[in-house]
Image (tube, rainbow, N blue to C red; front, side):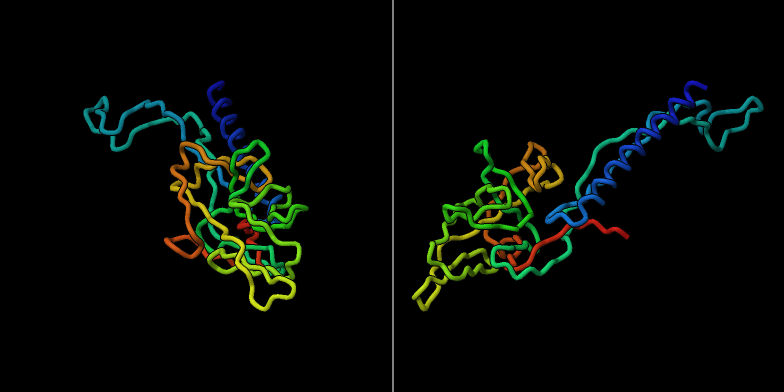
Amino acid sequence: MIRALWTASSGMNAQQTNIDVVSNNLANVNTVGFKKSRVQFQDLLYQTVRAAGSTTAQGNMNPTGLQVGHGVRMVSTSKSYGQGDVMQTGNALDLMVEGEGFFQLMLPDGTTGYTRDGSFKIDGEGRIVNNDGYVLQPEIWVPDNATDIIIGSDGTVSVQLSGEEMPQEIGLIELVRFLNPEGLVNIGRNIVKPSFASGQIQYGTAGLDGFGELSQGYLEMSNVKVV
């Protein structure tokens, strides 16, 4: 009886965690660049009461065995990095990666974080930053007299300057990717950091060598499907 209660308890704990993960997915259905998670389970060890193929008292062979399971355990939570829905904004500093790739951000502690959230702004110093003020890497400075910002599908950033006929190139947005993105560690604020499990960081140009292209004026929304 006690064993049965423990087995049932393992199932309830597992499902509570599953509900927590699903609830977090639903809570972030409108979060830019959010990637849904799912819990992975494994059954626990079995007690073998009678082995398949064993001999009965009458000398016959048991065609099936008798095994009693001891419940379930949670193995991991995994992220799905499938493409999210597209939202057109028309904002020159809203960017979407169509395919593989993360933007790079300088965090307050001096380390680099990575994100799929391409909603950017210009800070008081003219740098391109995210909504928390974290500077896009490599740094790109927008001149005070810029009247328009043009970002190509390859990440080339150009500005139209007041009184000038032709746009002036001021930088390139570089993307990164990981051998195992499911090994990335979520730290909140739509940002992930690498771990040993995520593998080596690969740097590249949008639209080349398997990296996704950039779309200006669009945002990648969550890949959570409510229905």
